[in-house]
Image 1 (cartoon, rainbow, N blue to C red):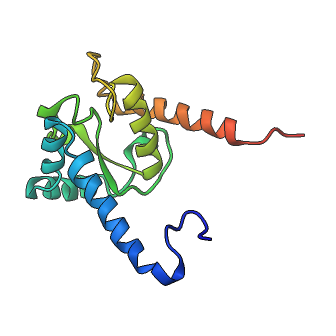
Image 2 (cartoon, helix red, strand yellow):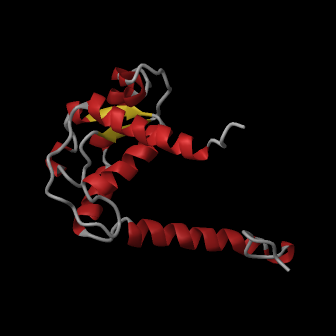
Length: 158
């Protein structure tokens, strides 16, 4: 019997690589290209312009998460994020003042917030709402979500 999450026994483990490649290929070719706008977004992230912009933003921000920094916390970041999501303002995709460095934790919480506020993400419809461009405001929303999660995850004191 094979233990989850494995798909194959030791004898057939080499087939696992093929399964992973198939899944990755499906994700890259179907999920990322599910709509015209997602295809355009995916293609943009493969351009020389994006790679250059990304490096420029990381250098400008000294690889520090700007959302954490806005809240007085110093955290290393390696992701370049659109303050107003690409899906909402396509014309701002390469606008430097709409790009900043963020840490993985802030990126995760901001993505969740964007899905509820803007309607981004798979299965959602983009909402006609006022774009939030103020980094400090976005940061306070993210930190509110983080503290609510931490409150929920922390066991009660006895």
